[in-house]
Structure formats: C-alpha cells, structure tokens
Length: 136
Image (cartoon, rainbow, N blue to C red; front, top):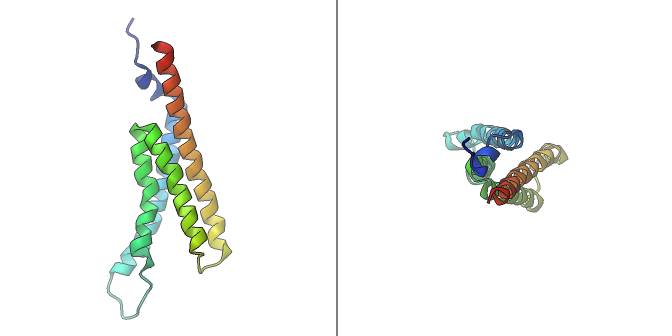
C-alpha cells in the first residue's frame, strides 16, 4: 500500500477547497468590480474626472493575487490575505469615502470575508503541518 504524503492528502480536503473557492471568489469579484472605473479613467474625456482609481484600483487586485498565492502556499497566502484586508481597512479609515456610509456597509463585510478566507488558509496550513508531524 502506497502512503500519500501529508501535503498531498491535506490539499484534497474540503476545508482546503473551501478556503480556495471563497478567497478566489472574493478576490475575483473585487478585481472585476474595479476594472470599469480604471478603464474609464484611462479613456479620454471632455471633462475632468478624479484619477483615484488608477492608483487605488491596483489595491483591489491584492486579494486576488493573495488568493492565487494561497492556492499553493497556504501560510504565505493566508497571511497576505489578512494583511491585505487590514491594509484596505486602513485605507478606508484614513480616506473616508465621499459616497457616505453606504459604501462602508458593503466594504466591511467584504473585508471580514477576506480575513475569514485568510484564517481558513492558515487553518489548512496548520492541519497540513500537524499531519506531517504525525507521519514523521
């Protein structure tokens, strides 16, 4: 009987796939939602528009990047997801939105989901580590 390595056995579990799917869905949704405003700022217009999305728009791609990293490396990706959510939250706290509190009612739950996905990746990493110690 061939014994699977602990890393391979941990990567097929439901918790691992839940962490992957949640983080990719949230990261992908955030990245897709920022593309239209970024494209609008890059197109020539007869009127002036605020160019805030060209710089801050890249910030919204960070959850997708950290989700892609956490697909393979749960520890690094999970920590990056948590740091990303904290960074986005700090940006919102330091630069309050001009659209009012309705904006925060949408962004705060998204940040909580990103932190939860990061914690899920850390739990998967911890379980991987525990199973590796048990087989050693």
